[in-house]
Length: 274
Length: 298
Image (cartoon, rainbow over all chains, first blue to last red; front, top):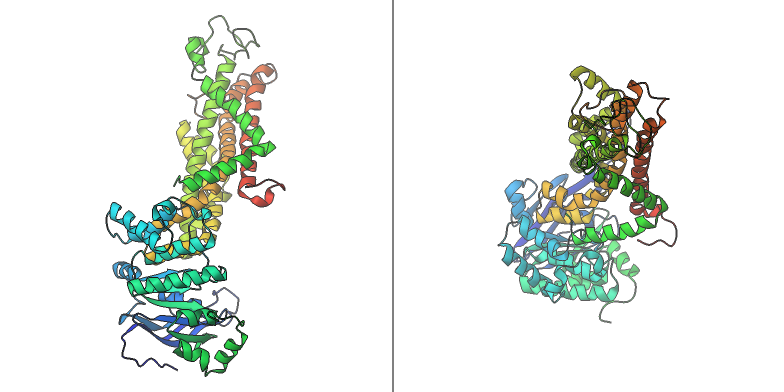
């Protein structure tokens, strides 16, 4: 399955990672079987690539992202980030890890606190990581807002999420994720709640960011066309198993696994660039 | 905490609130009592005999009905009933608001911590809340008062607050549970924010409106408990309150002889608690859009 014997160093490596959601134990009730979201998967993500994770709902793709963002811990197996196992990270080292790995969430209407202004939202990672002084932080925020296309940044600082459109909100969420200049970003279906034209704009933005900072991305999506447009390599995940890993072009043109073939067949006909 | 979004929500909420007949009536009644409470500071300045506690009209030996010098009459030692009534309004506000405030502070903190932490801490805090919730607060206060003698008004406030936080904490906990898994909280965790920061920066502004709603209902309860305690003779003897006035009517045997003395404090207790209740109901409508009538916007 694994075809990543390349010269590049791996930034992220998942070894035999399993995530099971066990039902709560209750008195006098026979507990049902645990749900296996991920069934001992192996994955390697190289430095500086955009790695796509494609699968249908419930296939475990979001779980993978959440494990990497350390919002959850694997039941078995180990995740290595830059050769370091991350499951035991605590305290200062966990905080340091958090400054290197950020996440962009799916729903921009849920991922911004309505009570915080845009500046406060983007400022938060800098504040909790204790980076810079008050003034340099604010400068950084304005600069980052400009970078994600919310310009002039000063004008957006004092707005609140309810005053922004969905696309603008997602740009704020991207700004929050890149303000720490992390090495690795988990993008969990960042455009699935937005319409297609805005999705394309955001893809372009993410690629610009990738080129500017040289970040590595895990791009989670259910949309093969989006994955093909964004990603260098794609892994197809199905019911907690990685069924196929290959370069984006090969996955689309020469799918090997029957599930991948099926997935390509059911994609709606419009593909970007046609 | 009091950011622009909060103010905007407050402003919009106020507009819905004031459209509501219950809210309007509640605010008007509260306004009247507010004026009464403020007036209580000035009445003793007119003449020392209008001091609600110590001012005695030298010409009067028995309880007398309304007259020009004493608009609502006097009690059996010659103190002005209107002055006592005004003082009672002040005390009711102080007792009601501070007891309610303390109980929502405790309730909100416990609720947020229990909901956010989950597990054993959640379970133990909520069992503690259950235990306190089923205790009858008036009976506990009576027992404590008879054990330790008569309490200072602030100790009464404190005990009411201690007895009344569990309901608030339950509501705040359930709200926190639904907030806990919202992506903006998770985004904050991914950024490396501490639990304390997440609780106070992200959860608290989102549960505060609900806490304020519960505060109005706590005010009603606190005023009633204080009045009942005072009427039964366990109030703060150095402090005039409506419950205390009722206690004096009863103790001096004027229950059926002096309606001008009996009715005003009773009426005031009912009206003030009613006003806070109406306020709470109207706020409920602001916070829960499902209760709104068609055509009202938020």
